[in-house]
Image (cartoon, rainbow, N blue to C red; front, side, top):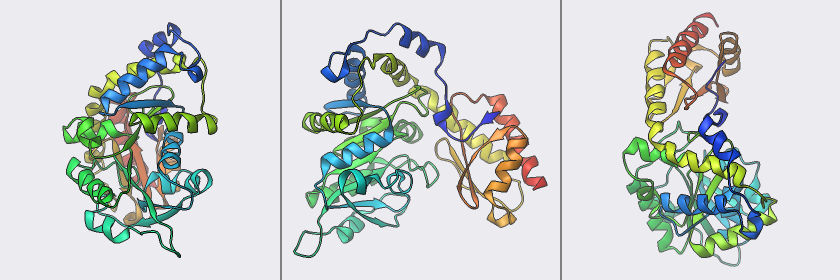
Length: 340
């Protein structure tokens, strides 16, 4: 099966497996796991933050950030298609007691004027805005890579109102690669960032939450509250250290996404969003098709993809997909559309 459902399906390579086997470990809740400590230090440096925290998942990292930055009852501003809005089970309400204010944005990030317009000051009747939420790359909008000036414009507008800014950077290094900038260029204007080690970078588990030392100190306590305190976690952190060395490989995933989009360009009735990173969105509404019907035919032909909605299919390239796999997938997808 050529699995293009997500870059979360990557499996650890032999280097990662060996790193896990030989990892120096200790009790991380006591701060005594040297491998975790090394990972957190290197990860913080990679995104230009003072400190970092290793967490089991990106969702946990995001939820911790929301809890630490805000007070219960405040509002969080976010693009309406943000991952935290669509795919995190209402955790902002359950874990942080937050109210959402969502709105439509250009390319998934609000303009400074939108931040000003949506900001709410506390009064007798209304909650105040407590956090601006950004996403880079933007998953549900097709893996869009958001440029540093767009991030800085939104963040500066929020900071002028005294509102902190968090970036869900699950695929942050994909954005940096696509834009040919450093990750620090994308994080310098914001207060905290989460990025995944277990997507395109290929680690089997884990994400990083980074920010100031005071932020991470509070985040560490919140991680324990959320059940994320780990013991000899160096066994899974060691592959994360390897993953940090895989950033240069992401361009291959982006190239494969472009090849996939180009290969489907002549399929009649479908609309393909030009990929900026490793995600290709295919809208099949014009062909009078539904996503699930196409996915069934793809599966019969040895290709797995995912449905973003009733008529939009998402393909996600990753380091376990070879050029030959990609070419075979193109042939299978074209055939599937021809026969549905």
